[in-house]
Amino acid sequence: MYSILIVDDEQNIRKLIGKYATFEGYQVFEAENGMDAVLLCREQIFDLIILDIMMPELDGFSACREIRKTQNTPVLMLSARGEEYDKLHGFELGIDDYVVKPFSPKELMMRVQAIIKRTQGNRSEDDPRKEIVKIEGLIIDFTGRMVFIDDEKLELSPKEYDLLFYLVRNRGIALTREKLITDVWGYDFYGDDRTLDTHIKLLRKTLGEYSHYIVTLRGVGYRFED
Image (cartoon, rainbow, N blue to C red):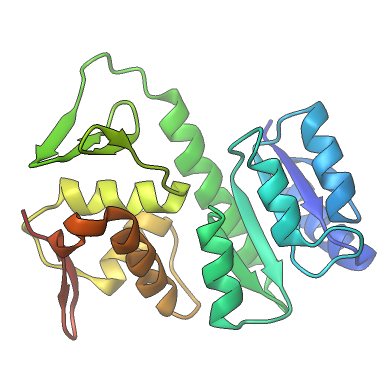
C-alpha cells in the first residue's frame, strides 16, 4: 500500500483529498502546516507528498526545500494562485506536478496515480544492462538515472529527468506537445500546456551549452536533435 502525506492548513481540503485517496487504496497521513510536514518526513518516508503553498509557520516552498535536503519524495503542490512565478519556483525546487485550487478530486487522484506509477516504476527496474547515451560532453545514464556534463553530475528535478530521457530516447523525432504531455506526465492533461514550456525552459537552463539540442518546432512541439 502506497503512503501519501497531505499537507494543508485547511482541514476540509485534507479530509476531501484523504477521502478520495483512501478510496483509491492509499494510506493517508496528514499535516496542517509545513513545519509538521518536515518533522513527519524526518521520521518516515512517504511515497508522495501533496503540499499546499500558503500555510502558517512554514510555507510549502520552504517545507519542500527542507524535505529535499534529506529525501527525494515526489511532491505534488497545491495553490490557490496560478501565477507562472509560483509554478516556476515550484518546479525549480523539484516538484513533480502543480495543481491550482479549486480542483477536481478525481483529476487530482489521476495525477497522484501517474506520479506514483512513474516513480515506483523507476525504482523497480532491475535490468543489469547499462544504458548510456553520450553526445560530446553530455552523458545520459538511463540505468543510473544520472546526467553528466564534462564529467560533472547535474542535479535535475524528477520531471526534468523524465522529460530529458523521453526526448533523448526519441531523438530525431518530432514530438507534438500533446504526445509529450501525455507520455511524460502519464495522464490526459487538463491544465495549461505552458507547464511543458516551463519544464523545457528549466531543462535548457540546466543543460547550459548543450541546450541547443532541444529544438523548438513552432506550432508542433519539440525535438531532441543530436
